[in-house]
Image (tube, rainbow, N blue to C red; front, side):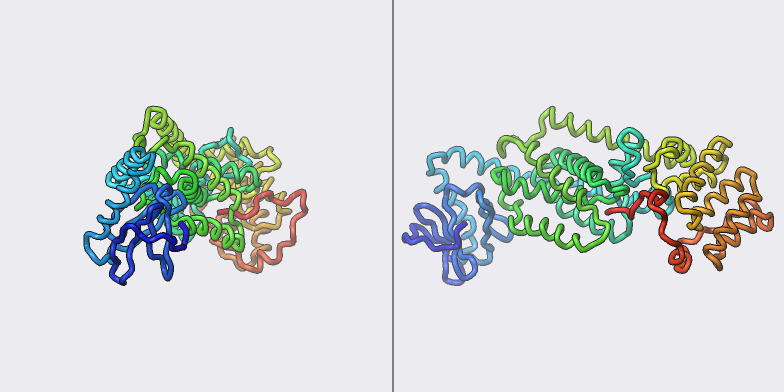
Length: 468
């Protein structure tokens, strides 16, 4: 749309309240725009729609609107729409334009209430709530690169439902609601589901390519929705009812702002964002129909959605099974990771703790937990009191009380004054009931963390902060 006034005299006018008018010329329509006017050739018009608050013109280069309150006559919006459609039908391809206008009208009137975004948001909230009650949810749900596709592939799904903080969850839930809901209005639930799957796959591939050790959050899905909206707006505007289009500058500007602003935030998984954006963009174009009249999902599209649903249910089922029996899941994972030099120390330690504190660990499971806990302690040169506590707990469960006491005393020396470690020692020496385990501290005293010297490179844990 050109912000100019055509030189030729208008052939028709629709009066506005401020004394100006919407003008129909021989080659296009001119509408007031700020202090000037916008001119749109008829050949660029895709859809003309009268909404509750405005008249919206969808074009090949964007959209322009005029408020209904701006018209002098209450019937002015419909009069402008009728006259524009008469002009469009008079073009050489007028019948095709009439059919497309009718198809877009039907789509606009038949838009169903979006629900997919709500399902994703509810799942994410449920995961966060479970993680507050069961800390294993966060650990078992995170994407850990070392586990790979063949070991615990369900993490490719669950990691995008786990969030680091309530703020992280709220921001992503807002993105799912706004962008996911808008995309679903534009292309329907079936196509949005496939865009979601492609965005999730792209986010995980981006994370793997970037070498991220641990990633959580639905931001890759949010960026996939943004990518789908941008791709359709730029490449397939002929499919979009005018009232369901967003300003191009707003869409592109929001995506660029996201990358620019988040570049100043630590531990942001930019590669996941890029992967989600690319995956969502290509998927939106790939599943787009040939024209606006053929949006009803066909057999192939329904089959693809069913396959995605089966994979998601299988991933959630595998994840849930691990939560139902966390000790067995930890032992199974530990057996795969204990000899892997790339295995994150945090993961080894937490699995060892899960086994040691389970209801009835077997001797074999405790011996595995001992190997994992020893490896974690060695990797940190015996300087992390929390890891020493895990090793002491494993010794205690194996009946090796003297070694448990010796190990917990090292933890006490590293974190003097921490009541939890003192109470653990009381358990190990028999001054406290064996099953009366004290509540672990949420954080170490600052002095204990500050005094620990840097680890030797070959022994340092290969697990940087979680990326979101």
